[in-house]
Length: 116
Image (tube, rainbow, N blue to C red; front, top):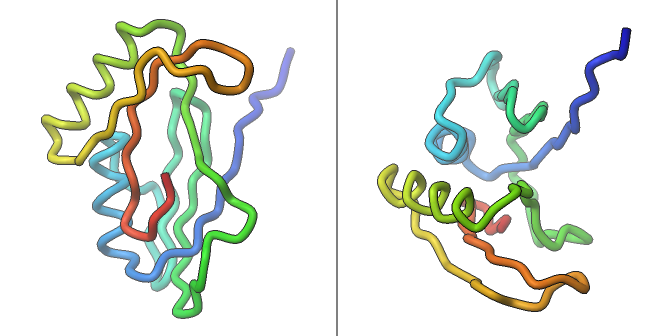
């Protein structure tokens, strides 16, 4: 039997409440764990363990360029855009762009700490 594998991303955040609200809205779920300075989201689709860790010393994004969720069709991109906008998140489109040696359609949102 194959074991479940999930990507784990731990993000430093300046304001835990504000960031948790953003990711609640983005994924449509509540954190599974909430402690002082820490929130954990266990996302089923895509399989992701996302933790938010309070830090008062965030100066830049370092090596991080962006975080993404790949979907199979333009229709799925547009459905995500509609859901995110209805939830009150500002979106930015990039349709029919040449990226990573492929033609892609994208919708972007930016979290409270500037992560795209």
